[in-house]
Length: 366
Ligand code: 5GP
Ligand code: MN
Image (cartoon, rainbow, N blue to C red):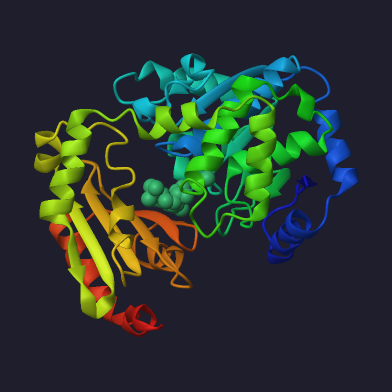
């Protein structure tokens, strides 16, 4: 399902890529990719900013596979990530960019500069990875995009992309399978991929969960993935502070607007500090809004100091991707998107309240 895509952006390229990704396995392209990775290369794998379990799990899963094939692999994340992902095999070698470690920026630049192949996983636009985006854009490496987000940017020579897949981890599994090397997936790789599949389907509950997600999950369990242990590491390793934060948000901060079938919550810097919030502690909060009967749109807004971060979730055909793109410089999937705002928290909320009337009919549709 890999397609060479060397030319500059044009609509028909997207169409071709999408068509190939969804409907056909192009053996010719797969052969070219196979030959690219058939001899040891210097490889860099990059995730999106604040990687989640799918971004990190797919990257470490792919990394595990490529290392076994003899490649020299570095995984770089454009930011830090939650502690509940640190159990993933290979985590210790990840180069995470952060303000606390300015020297990592230079290391990343060197690695990208030296790389012969750069994989971009679980994001589709170089603008989502800050300074790394420019490094990759100007690098001479062969670029490979593997992703399932809407509206991909055309910058890669090889693309494995489809929004039909619930997770990037699932796409990595399918790619390794298409390469005829499923047997190389060991327990460590399987656990990383399973984690991405499990979280991006919300524990196999979201409407992106096809039969195929279960089939891939079953294969991964057959190859050694441990569903209980993976779920425990990700969902049941909260700190007491994180649970208290959740309690505070649910009891004090969750607001429902019945006329728009919308729920929202805001969290200021002071509130986050009061509960000692760490990276990842806000993950999942937005889903509580959608668990209320009748609610079709849920929005979490929190102050990340440099900007206000938004998480948006929806039910059915209401597209938060459209809303995030149009108003909050973001995007993602139809029912799960993110964005940001340079306004204050209060004004970001006001902006949301101002745009809701535009969506009133859609939000009130049966
Ligand atoms: P979350 O709300 O969990 O941060 O993100 C939900 C989905 O939207 C994820 O698939 C994530 O990759 C995507 N996403 C989050 N923030 C952004 C953003 O600022 N821009 C874009 N394009 N996608 C985002
Ligand atoms: Mn994903």
